[in-house]
Length: 207
Image (cartoon, rainbow, N blue to C red; front, top):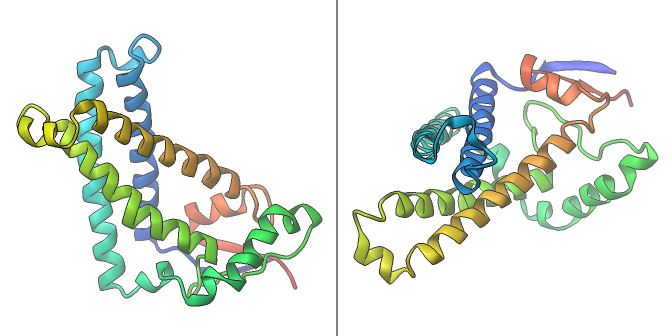
């Protein structure tokens, strides 16, 4: 195994861990809101709602700071899929995850500072950042402002519609988190990918 140049800059690592912490706390406070008897660590539902709101605001601010950084530093290309990312490259990557990885096959993508994400990661982040995140922001803001905009909320179906939609988005984020944590263990060694997001250096497999 060989060590590459810095794969993740300090800014990228800080941004990643702030996002991870924010999503984790949002999920925790969300469970506390839905199941106050089982997740009473925050003291009351009012506290859970308050923490959920402020963490959500912080997460949105951090997300926009990340977008600003990737746009101004011209690093947005890492997240833009090419045409073959939806076809051949995606098939090769899926084959590796579902079969090749258990046969000891080499990863189909040589990760380097110019190509940090494989095709399935690009597609996932494209949907996550451009569909699921805005969906959660909009439904979350509408739930927060239910008392301020009662006519608008009623026209959208009321809390009976908005609350389950927001919860659905939360479970999709939770599913992503579980998959993300699992895939973080599939590097050359069990902790190499996690270590790369801490130190910035990624260990490559020897050819």
